[in-house]
Image (spheres, rainbow, N blue to C red):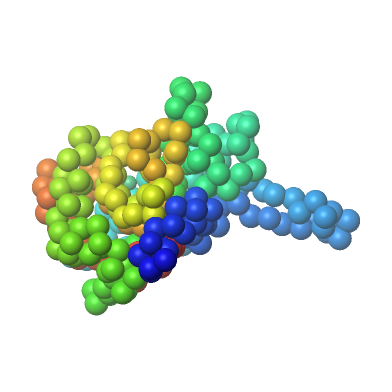
Amino acid sequence: MNKRDFIKTTAAASAIVAIPSIITSCTSEKKGDDDQVKNIVSSKFEQLELGYKYDALEPFIDARTMEIHYSKHHAGYVKKLNKAIENHPLKGNDIYNVLANLKDDNNDDFLRNNAGGHYNHTLFWDIMTPHKSSSPDSKLMEAINSEFDSFDNLIGAFKKAALSVFGSGWAWLILNRSGKLEITTTENQDNPLMKNITETNGNPILGIDVWEHAYYLKYQNRRSEYIDNFIKVINWEKVSEKLIL
Ligand code: MN3
């Protein structure tokens, strides 16, 4: 089996079980010696700290947008997620299991919007950086060349997808269930981990928020310019780490 076939064969399985380390949303805590066996699980989802200051991505993403986006929008999703999960059968699961088991059913809408909102934004903060020198590692570059022929083609296709989202949503670069890179889009706060809901499934390694709240203060209706500038702050080292083959 050559390397490429090996990657294809193994990635389909690992894509399902691999748990990227970006979210520690379910904390296990031991409640004293007597309860150690029980390993009480608290279903409290928490917002991770931003790895840089609000103004760190200037002039590409402005400080005011970052502050409102992180401290109001994302914080709001986390608060509502904790409320939504409280009386839901999926209580006690980590975010990946929650997303994977959501149903396309009105009863799950409140949890769906807020679990998606939490996961999506956690990924979004993580894959941006003030340091502009990053580039895909050799493994990711090989996968990009294999599926898109070139890095420039990938960027072009990603931008086109991000522009195509009608209304609020996200564009993604994912490792799909066949172990291949694929670009896809979702509405609202859906994402490709919601396998019962979205048509295209897989593990996101890159995502762009194209809700107006992500860019309107600085860019107004100029989504294209926002996308170009987002691309300039992508943390390709982090994106490369998320490609678990
Ligand atoms: Mn947002």
